[in-house]
Length: 148
Image (spheres, rainbow, N blue to C red):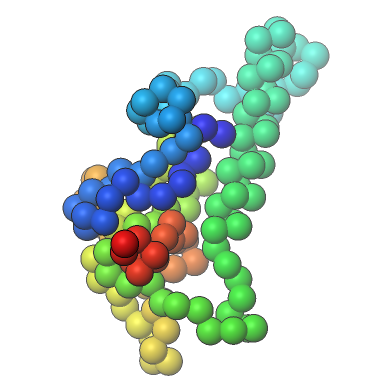
């Protein structure tokens, strides 16, 4: 829970770092080596440590999925929302990432549809440039919210 994303570290478009509660606790990001996944194991066969790990992993999976979904506001039918813009910092939704790992990206280009709404964005990540649909992107803060 102390590795959840709060906001970008800076407004620099080349900086993909983000602030977490772990920064306030230990002064840095709380990245750690992932533990063995025991969430699907039979509870009766596990040691006490593995049992605690299993419940921790189950809570983490549920919390991270629900938190990411909360970042994606689904109000397209009620009111018009602001499009993604260049230099917005986003979380890229991926189900196969380990606990405490969040794939970040900075929007470098947007690709609007015929209706003028952004449907796809080109992102710069640590590993290179990728394109993703906006349904897989969760903006942390929009550009104007970062301005002083």
